[in-house]
Image (cartoon, rainbow, N blue to C red; front, top):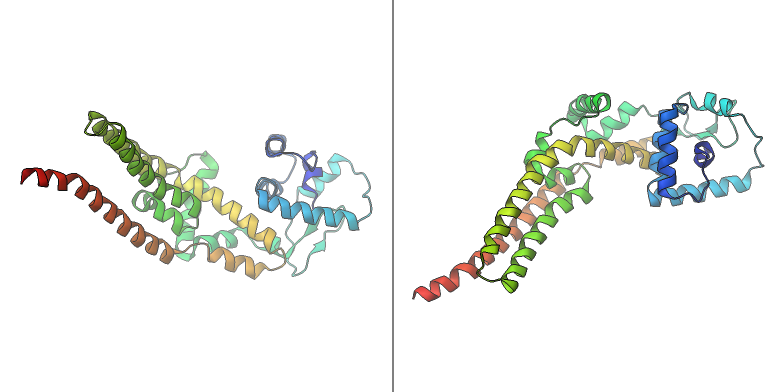
Amino acid sequence: MVNLYQLLGIHMQADAAQIQSALQAARVAGQINPQVLSKAEAWLLDAPTKMRYDAQLLQFLQTQAAPEPIELTQAENHLSQPSSIPTPEPIALPEKSAHQTVFASDALPQEALLQALWGGKQADYYQKYFDILEQSGKAPWHWGAFFGGGYWLCARGMWRKGLLVLIVPIVLFFGGLSVLNIVAPKSWLLGVYLLTFAGAWALGRFLYLPSNAHAWYYAFAKQRIAQMRFKYPNKPQRVLKMLSETNNMLAAWILFAVFGFFTMMAVIGLLAAILLPLYAKSL
């Protein structure tokens, strides 16, 4: 089993900032396999994953004798090779320290994992744009996010971001109207608030979100793959199955219908609250 803390030169009790700093220093030095660094980032910076990893590492260290000290150059040579050996069971690589183990899920090609996550016909599309993102660091425009917004995020498995995009504007809109109606009813501030809210929402929804959707999805894809590999280290087919089930278009359409219904009811109620008193005065 790989001792990532020893590899990065940090203590097991290091906080997220120290881990991030060690990862950045390792990337700058370029002496550790990028695949190992990506796995370390996914395992150590996600709190639930880190807890499981720490528990497994402690259990492993308790069952092993103290390893012989090795030179830094020897560790670098071990980590310069991709950790992928096609085997259904975890085995220790030859000429590696007792703390380095390769699992069956590591034998899965990265392309196969990404294709399973993206879904057949979409794999080539996302691969092309993610290659651009890797090379230039610039996220291309995403038309799917432009038209789908938060529903596209949910359909692609990014439920936390998707629900925030959908719920936060609604809460701010109706919450702001309620506060203004209490503090300054029939004031010009209402018009200013509506114009400001509409402008900010349009910029975020139709400019910021599509401009960053590819980068968000790329980071999510790498994290999701690392989590599934960690969760099912000796079940490669299970890893592929879980990745393929990440996308859920049906759930996104159901969410669209539910949000559309409640939003329509809220708008009707708001209009009724404004228009009915005016109608009553005109009688």
